[in-house]
Length: 210
Ligand SMILES: [Zn+2]
Image (cartoon, rainbow, N blue to C red; front, side, top):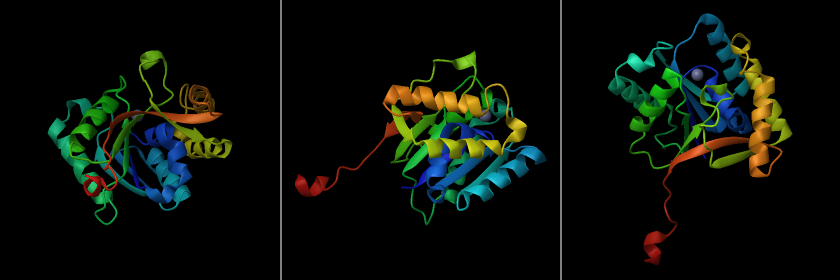
């Protein structure tokens, strides 16, 4: 199983998929779309060092203005980034993209990623973030991944690298609360929730049975 997380900003990957990333970092690649200041960049370097074998690439688009960039340029860059991160030309099995929230960069990356992945044959899932009331209730998950207590602590440890980004909705308490709510919805103590956008699977031995 190989996984790609497409992240508009350095921290979205942890907020949305920290549990999945920490479960087996060697199977995960992270595509960062926007650049960031030196502090955030060094926080991200520490995070990647902490993860060990996770592959990472930054497309270095300007932060905060993706909505006024060329849509074709953005989706083409994401497509090239995906190709660069693939291991041995083997396509990813799952790609996680940001939920189309009110943030202009998240919206732009959601759309551009879907364009870039138009021929992709695996699963595309949207991830959420513990944001405020701006889009509360709009994210409708339909896939849940159980988080053990240890995996939740690992996710919080990863978030701790982003000290410059912690705030009202981006903190340990918010991550813990969201994991608990998603756990309650899915019969686990904790969970990360996603929305399956598209899933294409080959039926095993389909041709030999027909
Ligand atoms: Zn973001």
